[in-house]
Length: 318
Image (cartoon, rainbow, N blue to C red; front, side, top):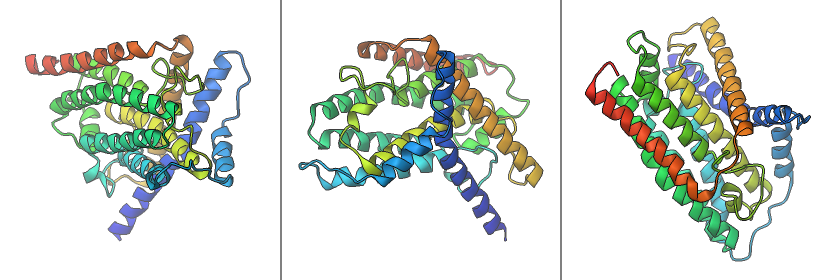
């Protein structure tokens, strides 16, 4: 009976992140439009776009290999699994023992590798440009992410997300400078990994500036729908990760009753709304930077994470 109970909650979490991911993207677009004094698309527009793409036929390039057809499924599966491992409304789920930050980085790195490979497989110039820029950003973002994990793991004593969330929710944490530096670094990495402003503009298709869109120009139909849904899940994953590590309030424990679970779900939705609102405000207030200045931004994230680690070694209270 306990196994069925754990399977039920794990399935609810997987379904919850899958259903909320397009809604989060639609909410960010709606808030940005309102801040720009425009009406904007409805909140459910991402669901309509996915349904429209699923109804369309797939058009394949003549020189595309079998990898081009398989990669969208691999990207979607890896991103969905990674997003489902982050504790959202309840910790101690059935697969929580695999919810390790290093495992999440490996899953996201695999999805990025396959996406860059798909961009080059079609043999177009845009795909090659986007893939090269994506690899350049990844080569700078991944070391920063690993240093952030190292800094937070030194404080929490583990890289397992449920354990880290429980520690961050305990009174032992207090106010730490290293945690603040780690939060800023993680936000910078999240913006870069999701190709958001100022690193990339997801709403444009300018050939000289786009990164993510350049790699998926040759996709259509259900393949493009899977890649778009994976990008929605990736944004939700990073917002959930920031909420899990730095705002873990409301996450129920393994023995939580239905009332605590309901509170956890409501709290999780509120955190997503707050994260989406802050992202929309930030993207409205800042302009896109040049591609060649992105290394400076990610280098700042790496230095902040390194400083957080050094402060932890200097004093345990920092």
